[in-house]
Figure 1 (tube, protein in one colour):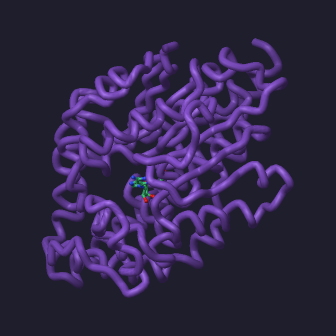
Figure 2: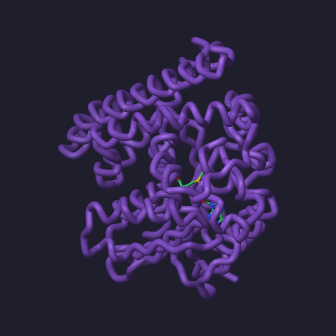
Figure 3: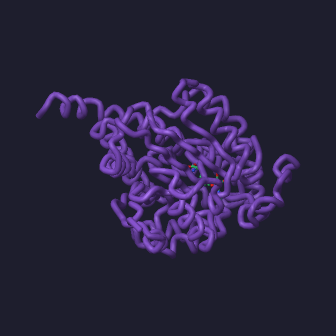
Length: 362
Ligand SMILES: C[S@@+](CC[C@H](N)C(=O)[O-])C[C@H]1O[C@@H](n2cnc3c(N)ncnc32)[C@H](O)[C@@H]1O
């Protein structure tokens, strides 16, 4: 055994256990919130509970995800800082707002009300695509207020028991490899384009993995883009000037043909109607340089992990996701390949799937 591999083994276990501990903390927070909401909205407490069998599957899948995330970081020389997304103090400071918003969200879900907006969120609503003007997941203000943007990352981690950011990273080693063979990173600055960047969680992963790259991160939501900018302004370095946040619709990007070496999105496609998914992939192809890399990470689809098919089918029952059933039924691979891409890698991690493609030479 080499010195490096024994060093990696030494660090792997404590890191995996820390991830697991963090995940357990999110799981407990989620259970407490669900119970509180069920009591306040006088709904069935049983629906907030997991069966023992489901808990065992959940725990096993999450552990496998963390094991492979930590191994990827240690084996591919990715920075371990990827695992440290925020301090426990910031997390705890946000908790009162999470609890109060969790109750509002449950009441909205009970009323099945998915078109409810504050005055702030109403502004400019009519300029946005029709499919987008809604409270996705029944979340307060959809994607359209500072309040929603402030709580978003925490709420996503609650939903996935603290595994969301690890899911975002499942194809990172494949992306590193694909871009390595595309361009000599030392001699050329890689330009990334992110579609639907939200509050910039994946932008951070890409920035830490490719510290010399230029990243243009885009989204339809101005408050989410502002939150993403804040994330980077906290640790302001000269390198952060290589990151730009731009308001843009992924179906009509304000960039010339062949402007980027890599284009990617995370958790975007499952929220789009089928025809919009096709338009976004076509736009990605247009702005990608010949031989460039396209990748996405999103929900599993039917048949990817058959034991989770029932979970996928039930997901839109409790979370307002009107296009999700169509998303899980129409293989992303078919849509992406028919837009002129060749598949390089497919990975699964817990409830996520990631695929990496290269644009076919025209
Ligand atoms: C589920 S969130 C994912 C955010 C982020 N990528 C993440 O990993 O958490 C979906 C994001 O896609 C954005 N979005 C939806 N439709 C879009 C479109 N047509 N163009 C650009 N962004 C869009 C939303 O505003 C939201 O920020």
